[in-house]
Length: 134
Ligand code: IDP
Ligand code: MG
Image (cartoon, rainbow, N blue to C red; front, side, top):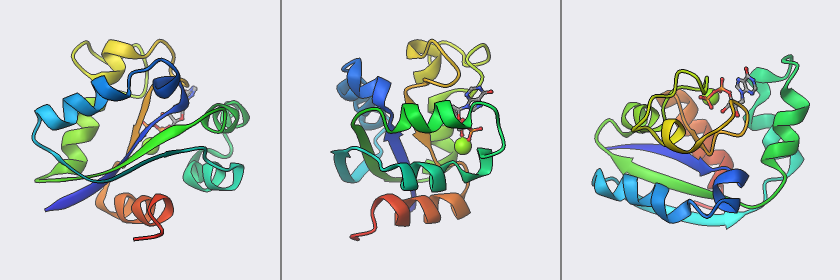
């Protein structure tokens, strides 16, 4: 069994999409092992997106991610990392096809509703970052 880290980003919480997003993961029979709502600190947001620190949109991204509460989920299932990335849809809003979470709900490439780990290595790091109490 694999595990992955999902974050329902501030716009997903603000737009009251928590239930509908979680429903999709439950419909896919993925298991929610852990879950909480909270506000991400600037430090944690900057570490989480360290790979993008040279991008022009980085300050905007950090401001967005710390602008309000998020919901963090630890999901478990077979091939859950790749599966959940597929359910999210592409990063570029114009490439996020209908039927995916971003394709159905996101209106911007920055404010795109959800995050999910993109590899086993990153999943392990991100689970430690957001579920450090485990
Ligand atoms: P991902 O979230 O699909 O893994 P990453 O490339 O890791 O995509 O980017 C992290 C986040 O940074 C995206 O989810 C989005 O919020 C923001 N982002 C990525 N690329 C752009 C861009 O070109 N313009 C604006 N925001 C972006
Ligand atoms: Mg990413």
